[in-house]
Image (cartoon, rainbow, N blue to C red; front, side, top):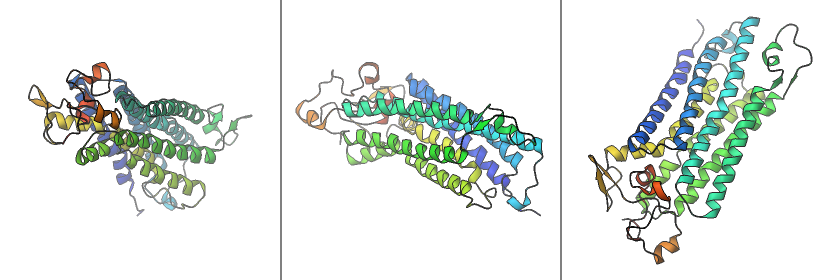
Length: 345
């Protein structure tokens, strides 16, 4: 009897989208309850829709290709089965990159809303945001039009392939885009580290906020593993790549990206229902049965915070206007500088 781990592979295909769905649902529910639903939440929600679509296509693709079995145990697919499986493969490639691009765009918008007043941070976010959108659109188009006409991507496997079609170098395209995904992951994670350095927090709270803003390092590690999987495949180093979890690494990556993107909102939800979980602060107020901190992000320069104390009427969050409200996610996710201008204890 052929050794078969396909049920476990399919379980991974199902479990990670469920986890990301729960995370996104918790984020949306928290934001709506707080009446603080913004563009970063919308982008995350759209990314989730792409991820669910990817999971459906991936499930069918794995079943059709007998992934989870050893290569020697997989029956030869018919021509029509091969063509249909190739269509599903193309669909996965088209759906994959938008998820990561939308997640990174959501993070950029969130970081911009934190209101860091340093021009270097602001312009870095704006430039990276533009590069990320350009990368997302360009890779989407390149993945869709790998062959011209598009139908040649699967019809080239017919006994008589179409005339005058052109396809890009799939190996180069796959490895370059996987490498760029890792690079953009690193960049989008270094930015909050620079922002966190300027926050007026004690060590414990700085660690908590740092973890909430930087869980994306997990995604970067998975991206690196994915690159290795692709490299082994294209270089012919994996002789039994159908037996294992290699075929679901992309699906795991995009769903973990969604989960980590929701981390700040999940911290906000915990604070809503367990306000003492992250420690109490002075100047809190009640909203129903939940105590909110009046502290907010303090993105101003450290030297300014020492020489220019804030009054209770002054915007201490650096969030300009509506986001200065203590009920905003920013005020809950971070416990920044206290209202007297000194670091919180």
